[in-house]
Length: 208
Image 1 (cartoon, rainbow, N blue to C red):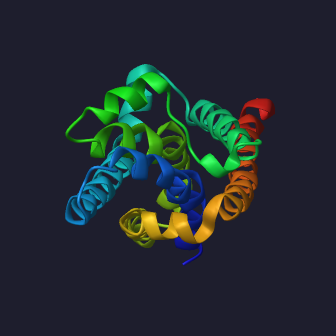
Image 2: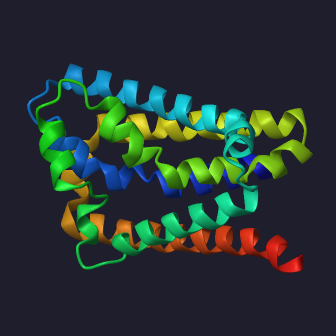
């Protein structure tokens, strides 16, 4: 339960589906309610597939490129911290952002579920680094640890799906003031997670 709660809270903060709502609304403005629902479900499936693929195959990727787990934690922590700073800025109500070129391209795409929504907006480098960084803790807990991690990923994807399906209503209910407050709060949590990852990666390296 401890691993599940830690993994869920960390992943939900980094994935930050609330911050992705404005972009999802913009990219699906010409879609019907049924199409939006299907896209939200598809996005959540991609999130599960991406995060679990990198979690279970993370060691192979690290070994292939000769990267240590500590390096991933530091790099991931830096990326998470940088993204968190944007959520703490003046335009926090806008949530997550993507490059203008990607935005314009996505407006003309038939399927925006994998790119840019699932990757890199929701299950991007920060979330991937986070699940890979959890590997040691999960392995030490055995089967229950693996089950907790998988359950937390599935739950984060499920909550993301629900948030995206009701994104129009939530956006109207929260308004700019509500979105700004939520973004700043999540941004602070994400920044804390990023710093924690950097320190956990630095500690073993400094001991040598």
